[in-house]
Amino acid sequence: MGNRLKGRNAVVTGAGRGIGKAVAVALAEEGANVVVCDLGVAVDGSGTDQSPADQTAAECRKYGGKAIAQFGNVSSFSDAEAAIKSCVDTFGRIDILCNIAGIDKPKMIWNMTEQEWDQVVGVHLKGTFNFIRHAAPLMREQKYGRIINCTSEAWLGGVTHLNYGAAKGGITTLTWGAAQELGPSGVTVNAICPRAKTRMTDDPKVREMVVKRVEKGLMDPSVLKRMDREMVDPSAFARIVVFLASDDAALINGQVFLTTALTIARYSKPEAAWQVENPAEGPWTLEAIKAGFSADKLLKGYVNPAPPKPEEKK
Amino acid sequence: MGERLKGRSALVTGAGRGIGKAVALALAEQGANILVCDLGVAMDGTGCDQGPADDTVKECRSLGVKAAAYYADVSDFKATEQMVRACVSNYGSMDILCNIAGILRPKMIFNMSEEDWDRVLAVHLKGTWNLCRHASVVMRQQRYGRIVNCTSEAYAGTVGHTNYAAAKGGIVSLTYAIAREMGRYGVTCNAFAPRARTRLSVGDDQDQGLQRRIEAGLISEERLKGMEETRREGADPEHFAPFIAYLASDAAANINGCVFVTSRATIGIWNHPNVIRKFTRGWEIEEKWGIEELEKRVPEELLVDYVNPAPPRD
Image 1 (tube, rainbow over the protein chains, first blue to last red):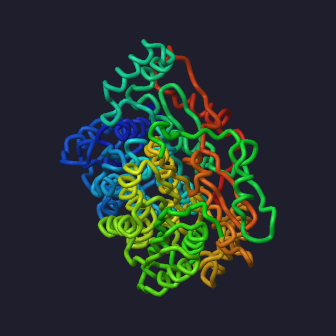
Image 2 (image 1 turned 60 degrees about the vertical axis):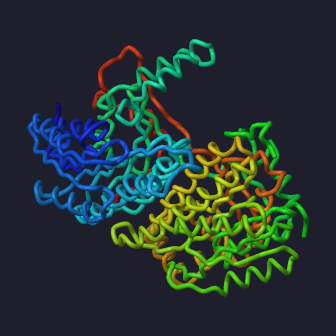
Image 3 (image 1 turned 180 degrees about the vertical axis):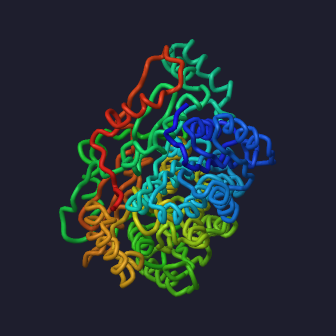
């Protein structure tokens, strides 16, 4: 309980359950009024249910602030506009935007359907754009705003769900770009990469697999220990969002944070690590290129993430 | 001229002009047969013209290889399936896929229309996924394949076209994931960020846009340096196109999941964003992260060497 966000108004998407709910409640605990956006869909995006959003709104109100539920599809440009408008109409303005809504439809690329791609990218990436797009003009005008997006470690290679990984990569870049465009107007844009137990990650099979590997001595026991300690309710780290939304974080902009019950970390930005110069004036020759690809030049420290299986090599 | 890709067949999107054309010719120079895919649109994605693809086909043929033109929209899932089929039925296999097609619709995020977002994301991100999706089936059966995607330094954050940048960020994540999913089947997937003079990078509009961003102090020195190299006289894509032929060759069988920056003078490799600063607490602590703890530790421990990319202006 505190007053750090007293008088601030927040829109939180995906706030009906999981990370979104933990974030909404944490903001309310510090005095913020909250628009709880959630369509109440299943993990794969199907169905609708108003009760998760209603329950979160009721929980937020316990802390003394105001809260309303808002049911819309984040991938709809006009629904996003309506959600931002309801915040302004109900509470007077919008100070904080948290884009947390997400779905998952895992498939290997060669089996993925067009719909599985479109829907996952639609909810995560387009959804995040939609809300920023409608909040940004208001935040610029009032010279104040805090935007916190939810990305994922899958951004760095989302095997078995590259729709999800690609959408999260888009969100990471959108965070960096929007931070540069909106920073001068007193608006910060940051992202979190959460590790927590939610509907999306709570898979007993994953734990069983790790237990087996530890028993066989293939995996260090500390991996299981860490997993059990990190696969907990997201309220464990939800206050990092409160911090990013508070006045203390006015100068923290364009950053990506890993957040777990155990660790909070900051990511580097991608940059050229090694480079070679063209030894000639004309086009690169294949010989010059090949010479650059040595273990002491471009491939310094490089490990092939998935080398061909020898028996399957053509 | 060489024979490094003799007997290989390649599908190159956006091959009618600019970087795509230079890549198609570099592959043809090494003996590959080419399916030249280009709808011949204007820079913003409007209109269509068969001329550019036809011209590239003629130039490829003059190098002694087979080539055919294919006019279709890369953002169309079904059309891209036909495209991949055409490559297999024309040349007997589909060994190399280069996703170069791209359009540009620059706007600040607070002025961007839904259509400007959708079209740019559809051509770059969905278009790249579409072709990878259909090619992955063929390449997995062949136990052989080379995928090279075109990203941009804008992936690391840029001002004035978050749609383009977010799509390019999604392409980087897609590249990382495909590398991991397909590597074991003898398929590599890499990406490159080109610095070259093309319709997209040089022109009156681009000059004015860049000038405005420099004056507004919205552009980092490093990015400006890159853009100057991109726009420099003589920075034609032909100079580094042999690099793509190299990635497609047998010599690069073990280069997978990398992102390169390529120019007339320099070839560089990008690092993988990683945790650079972190703080952790003991296993035994069960309580949520406390807000006071975060207020102290985030600035002191995570923000070492941090520079705000766009601080607020008075």
